[in-house]
Length: 66
Picture 1 (tube, rainbow, N blue to C red):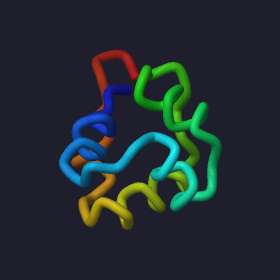
Picture 2 (picture 1 turned 90 degrees about the horizontal axis):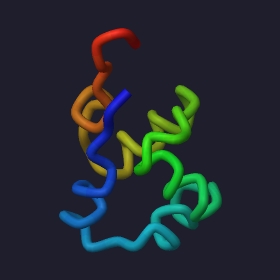
Picture 3 (picture 1 turned 45 degrees about the vertical axis):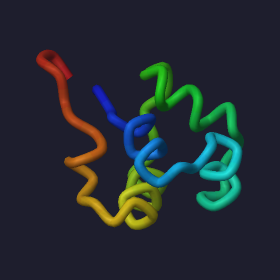
């Protein structure tokens, strides 16, 4: 799964640490999601979607084989 979380953070000018605090996860979790090393839970994906004001599919996209 691909994501554009880093781009969305840049648009809102928010750091990984700030986003993590707002969403209620660790900075390492945000870093792992951005690096595509961790697939977020549905709950976490929905929280990120709500924070950025965008549908989940605008932040996360399936790749071939997912």
